[in-house]
Image 1 (tube, rainbow, N blue to C red):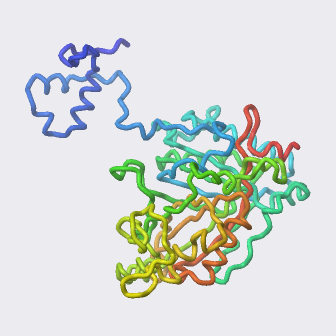
Image 2 (image 1 turned 90 degrees about the horizontal axis):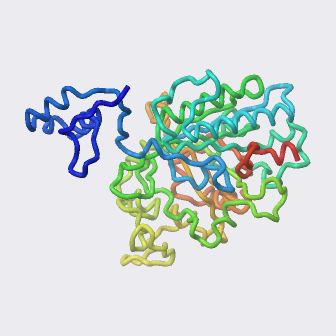
Image 3 (image 1 turned 90 degrees about the vertical axis):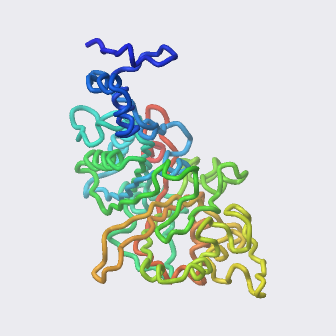
Length: 423
């Protein structure tokens, strides 16, 4: 059908505006705009509906390429508003061939959904039919147990050695580890859930869900300018993350070409921890006490040693009162690379809230995800230091944990993990 246009709605530049777009614009500016001029009101009242609506923002139209970079998406991709983490175990009898077929299906589905396309065939659930890709990313990884189940123990990376025990751990094995790990992120909740459902359906009889967690972050555009995210304690979280512009960024985060095993070259290792925050106890601290525990101002993330958020922390700074400006057990001091022989990792977390516990306290905190080229040089030394002397640790409970090898992105025509499974 030919679209009907109103000559009176043609802007000065001569580009015609459909009546539906005019109606949408009037609705966007609010009721005040609807009463300006009887002719305009008549035109909008007669608007037709044949043409497609105009997107209010570009949020839903942003797409991330499944194979656009050497690394998988979801590692250096900007934090999304919604996230799902899930681990699967291969079903009894599922072998290496079955695992390869599953990764092929998963890769094809992820690539299609990240491009904003529906699921294959007639099986689409319709959950996200009205939305664009919304910065969707899907990331796949392998747990240590995957290699034994598929007869690939000889190809298992040394970096997948079990994480050591930490004194503050209270880990639930039912929500830890797993053969296969999936990370989903998107700026729309329905798009993210759609991807989760699609991958779970594609698992079929090959793999069974072991655990699944839901997270969130601030929605892009909620702040006047791009800002470092805040966690549920209200603290700016991620200021000292390695930056892609750093000369040693790839060395810290991604496996080098000469490292073993070769199928991990360009990949990374993800440490995943579910960390519950004792928010009721935290909220009872005064602002000054909270800032002392962290070592940064809550308002703007600036270190207590002075400056702005991105001013380097001065661990030797003495306050006018003659004491360390940043306390000896402050989180920024204990976690600083200077305190850990240069150890660093790229943190890309989601917050979570799973309701309330029997005592009424919120079951909420951080889905901590740390990326590094080698966990023994990234996460482990830092966590050991935090475990021994971090003032923040008394407000945290580590309740689940996992370590996963995340290979590089799939090559064109192939799938994630093919060099491992077919090499």
